[in-house]
Length: 152
Image 1: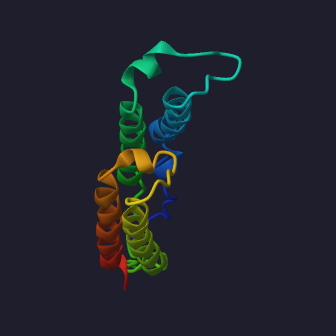
Image 2: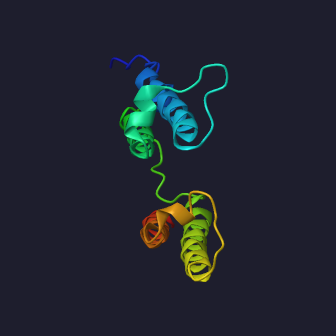
């Protein structure tokens, strides 16, 4: 009988070691920092105003978010396959704390919106969102249900 030679696992670069995922997440962070300067009264230190970012206005946040989501998708899809015979991990330890945190944050987001909506209190960026704050709070609550599906 011939024995199977012991194979070494291949060196697959995947997950967050994938160059495209890293490039996209770094690009998202840089874009978000640029958006901060483009949507506030501040100019880039030692650079000044960048016309392209100022032209997009608040849509820059959407570009940064899309870049970050693309990075997470690529990192998730390029994760190396587990070795055959390895135990399958079903639950995640981080699911319950993230579920509770996401639910609490969503509830707090909506409560703060309703409390300050009848006053003259202004919270930067938060107050500018108007009724979109309800959508954002509900998004956190929906994400909590998503985390609940990962909880064992």
